[in-house]
Length: 163
Length: 123
Image (cartoon, rainbow over all chains, first blue to last red):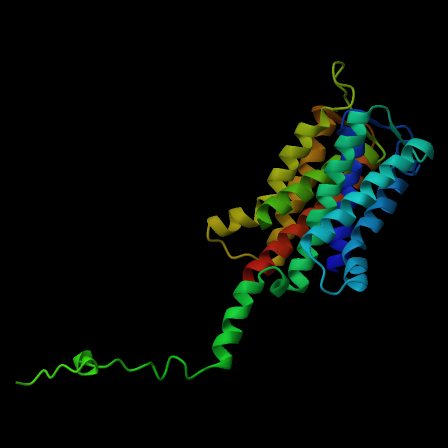
């Protein structure tokens, strides 16, 4: 269910970016019942973006945020670079358009994958906070028996306090 | 955060429906051909739909599935009904546009408000 929700948000984000950002044109526009290349491209790229986190998790169980971000960015930059050579209903006319749309879609993809990661394993995001209770559990008596201080340390130096 | 997500999703859905649904026409600006006048319409309808649950909470009214469904239905179909009469960047040219647009926007609006309600109950 969560996967579907993320896929849906990504699909809409890609569709929005393809239509609105300068330097990118949807040449094969969807008007139902006609399904244009723009819709198929958005669905395909959203599917790919939505599986980034599961694949990263599968390849590397101890994955990091930077790895997730890198995977999202590489996927989208490569996809939009391929659009330049393969006609799929989207046309990129300027370099700025390519950079804009890739960054926007990568940002959206990263955000949804990050939310997925956070919901699945919140302990991965804050290891330090997660470690504190474990340390406390390992030594439960450390606070119960505090070190006793000497009331009068003067005896240590050979001084007799009593006359 | 939930509200922002809900607003974003509702806005995107209205934008998508305006572009892809049959029977709806968008007016484009001459200076900026990429940007249609549907953006403002999407923002307004998205905002209204995303605000149903927060408004019910602020007014301390009892939230129920029926209430959420009814209010989102009124906003969604009402918005498409209004643009059928008064063009507002987007124009409804056939009954199918009104029906498809209203239904899709209503379904997503109900879903987002319902999820927000459920998350509020669980937390």
